[in-house]
Length: 131
Image 1 (tube, one colour):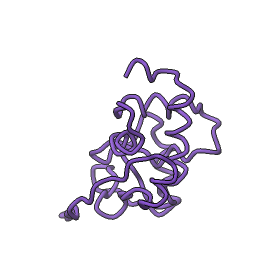
Image 2 (cartoon, rainbow, N blue to C red):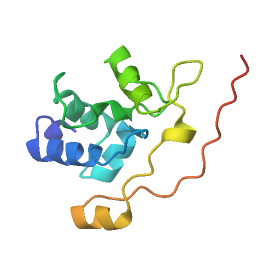
Image 3 (cartoon, rainbow, N blue to C red):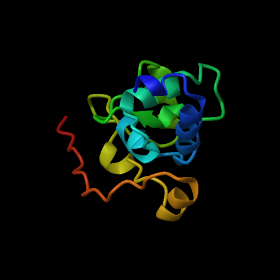
């Protein structure tokens, strides 16, 4: 991963992919890394997202979250932006992944842009709210 730190080509590939995530959907750092490839991991994707800076308006950084549905350290602003897009949260403040997890771009887009499509995943059960 250290060779990906501050790599403008890698960061550009991450940002290009994140621009594909539609409003109301989220992806995980690990899923983005899997699609970008090249030996990347979720931490490298996190560095690429952090490099955007707080005034970024071009890349929808708020749509990239942890695999357990928790949001990054940007805190309230991230949850507010996601809620404005219709993303829902459970009682613990995690994104309802069963509803909002993005399956990735279609295979044709991935092939044309040299990304790896995500493998099909079984449906995630939606957590029931008891209280």
